[in-house]
Image 1 (spheres, rainbow, N blue to C red):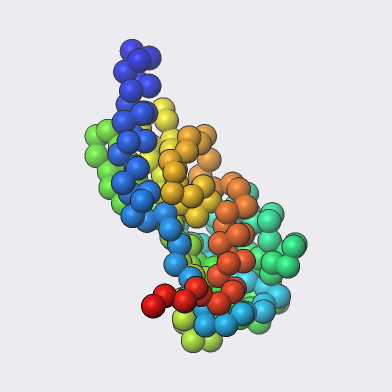
Image 2 (image 1 turned 60 degrees about the vertical axis):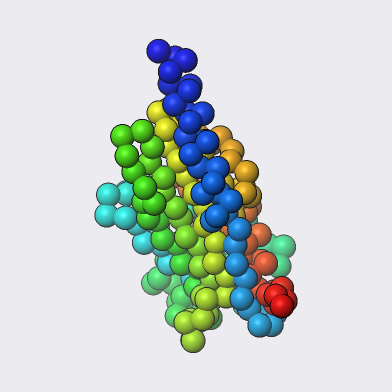
Length: 174
């Protein structure tokens, strides 16, 4: 029985690998350096996902903002500074695919200029749940599949690194 559950988890990692190669590399589109003091967080959960923030909760990666040159992250839309923030970090969680054996969800992170609606940076974090195992890849962990606990959010500094890179000019593509 335990061997079967372990094999199920390993199969989930194998299932996620091609998706990691396709989705785990972020895109950056800023035309010049962007200076901002604050970024408003706009996170919308799926209807059946109470784990995504409600407006008061702070995702674990939020603690990396507001230091080392990064703008502060404003979570509460009623905050006085929220209306003055020039940038929004949109987070949307969607189910990519779901079957009897696997569920693949994606968190799409988009750094958006509020005035023009221009997407400055866009990246994904993908999760696969297979049996008792949870694996992920994306802007937090890179293109390689890694094991993770059942946390509803990526917990590293990858989101902050993604935003910091999104505030710089996009690389030239001929």
